[in-house]
Image 1 (cartoon, rainbow, N blue to C red):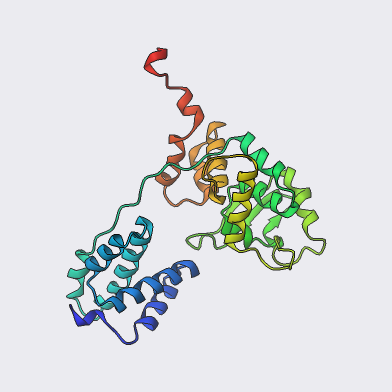
Image 2: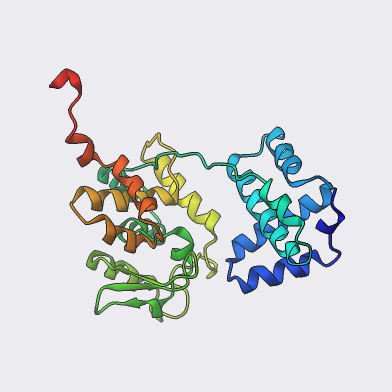
Amino acid sequence: MNRALYDANWKELLLDELKLKGYSKKTISAYMFHVGKFIESGLGPREFLLNLIDKGKSKETVRVAGFAIKFYLAIKAKQDKSINRIIEKTPNLKRDKKLPVILSRKEIENMIICTKNFGHRTIMLLMYASGMRASEIINLRWKDIDFNRNIIHIKLAKGNKDRIVMLSPKLKKNLKTLDIEKKDIIFKTNRNNKYSLRAVELIVKKAAEKAGIKKKVTPHSLRHSFATHLLEHGIDIRYIQRLLGHSRLETTQVYTHVSKTAMEKIKSPIDI
């Protein structure tokens, strides 16, 4: 094994580079973890990734580990050009091309009705009405909402990008009821703390279970439903791309595969 891959100061090197590149806290944490495990193993990149697969780790875990290792090796390659050959031989595991879970308007309505907690209902309504991610919802602040113009300014979202989404007039009253003082974070727990991502996942999961929905429903299902329902109502896919904050149109085009409107235009051979 090439000893040039190892560095006593690897944590500092990696952390500094991740910060300079503007990576999110979540990505930094994941990369630090995977690179640490890689260095501890003493294996080469290919062997390390194969070992993860043999251990039954998910494809997404292996993909992220591979990207983390390549990122670290790229830093080391600045000191030793021979490492570039190792980077070239490190494979990228393909992501599974799964179609998103889409909820009908009735299913979403039933989830809202089954949820008694007012704050929890508002969180789900806002996710569906705006297409916001769970991480964006829990970090949303009062100063980010323009109640006069009916817009929400999402700051430093995924990829450190700002974007604007619509605020449904139907949600104004709900939001204003949450906090009389309207300071700092909008959504707070009973203990006056910010919600965690796990808490929002449980809110959505329990609502789906109470509504009798058998699909695997996550907070992202509401975002997927937002995009698909807009597409079904004739909204241009490029506008949807901007609302979702996607860098590539190809990412947004997945919703054309699950749009009911698109499917209704195609007849089965038995009906022709």
